[in-house]
Image (tube, rainbow, N blue to C red; front, side, top):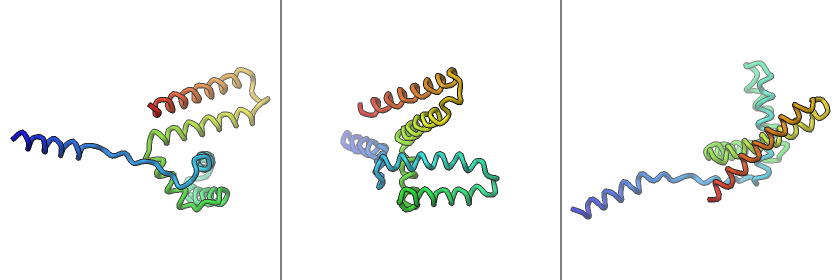
Length: 141
């Protein structure tokens, strides 16, 4: 009787274990981050178009991103979907791109903002960097 309980327990244990899918992109990480950044920028630009035109503009932008990075659109989309499936890694990519875009925005508008606004951007950038570092430390343990 004890053996059947052990088998039953082992069966539930093995079937209840959720196997996490490992993210193995076919695109190098640095290139994928650059592509991801371009997609984020394109997504923001798409919002400037009328709703009926947004799908065709999105297709245009994705084709341009594919051409710029010399990677087939299907491969880009497959890698982005895999990235979205791994929530923790996806959020790290989002944070990384956010820091980079904040930095570029600060550099682009340098001299046009007053010192208080520049300081606020610097503080936001530092906070995001610290969050990324703490997340990376948490994933290594």
